[in-house]
Length: 258
Image 1: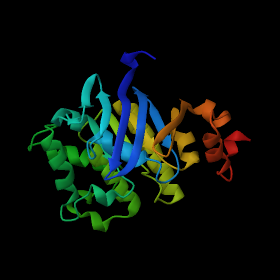
Image 2: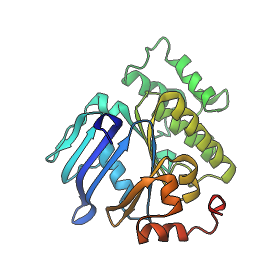
Image 3: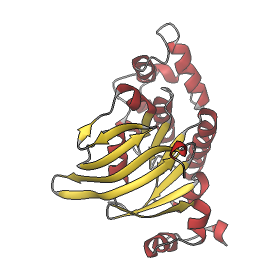
Image 4: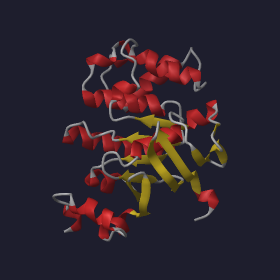
């Protein structure tokens, strides 16, 4: 793989919560315009790695390079405003990014104005475009987060992340709390927006069906380490590690493997 093909380089990252080691010498490359699925059981370090990439958690050692520029090196926190704009995250619980005291118009417009995506004269028009793109009710902008369903909140959170035109999206279990039909439409929206915006995505999930549907490549985590990486088709056909096999064996039915 050539360096020019890689958007995010993670090198020998170690991170901990107090004295508890959460990431142990993690290295991973994420290629441009791909969806990398990060899988593993709860507590394996998936969300911790996402927090390190976004700057929500500082690594103890290691490097993170984004689009050729250093984000971390030798314990220095180097995230800049432009880099923060280019890396956005959608959480499992959308309330984590939606201020309950603000209308949806304010939530979206504050993000776009802060990152200079548009000006005040045109920001409401841009907000309405995102409401329509996310297939939300016409009166969405004047309402507060509490008045929406779980699926609608998650689409608002996705709009909040993407309205600033990032290059890289981290989706941390964004569909796990949704009903199956709502989950399906959310995945379709993410795939459509990936194509339209040229996004690179780190998609974190324990649902192998979702990983198979949306991802191009798969990385397996266990106990804070990367166990294996590879193309999706190769992983689902024949995992390289016993832990990878165990993850697939734990899935009751995988029709596409029959």
